[in-house]
Structures are given as structure tokens and as C-alpha cells.
Image 1 (spheres, rainbow, N blue to C red):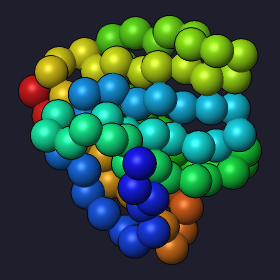
Image 2 (cartoon, rainbow, N blue to C red; image 1 turned 60 degrees about the vertical axis):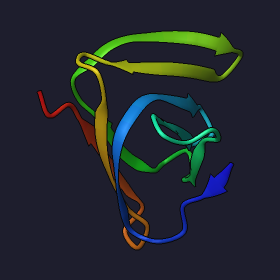
Image 3 (cartoon, one colour; image 1 turned 180 degrees about the horizontal axis):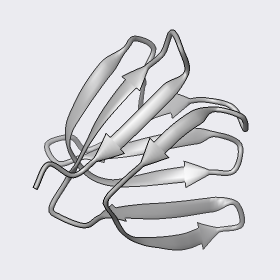
Image 4 (cartoon, rainbow, N blue to C red; image 1 turned 120 degrees about the vertical axis):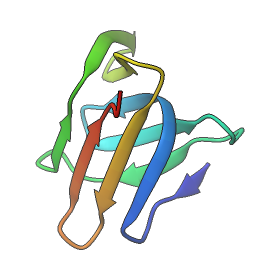
Length: 87
């Protein structure tokens, strides 16, 4: 797992593992480990084009895209995450 500490754009996000505490783990197609953004409970994140959401364990949940992948922009300075499907 690698921590996201700088503003970045993630491509080919297969799913997102989230928690009620504001942590988002991004599964990238070409990587074997999650990339983790540690927000807080009041973090500003918006995930569009969601196909389904599944609970995994207590406050953890999986978010799946409507198409093959999400694209996500993470602005670490402002604490903002935006994800969408390009197709």
C-alpha cells in the first residue's frame, strides 16, 4: 500500500475501498497494492458513475464503477477527491 501525499490523478481505478473514517483505498489495474488517501470523516469526496456499493466489514465498503474504470483526481492541499467514469 502506498500513501497519496501529493495532488495526483489516478487512471484505471478498478474499485475503491472506503471507510467511514474518510480513508479511501484505490485499486489500480496495473498495481498489486492499493494507493491510500487518508482523509477524515468530514473530507470532501465525490464519486460519480457508481455501478454498485458493497459492505465488506463494519465501516468498510467497496465502490465499483459503471464502466470498466474510474478516473480519480485527488487534491491533497484542499482535501478533495473526485472520481468518475470516462466512458
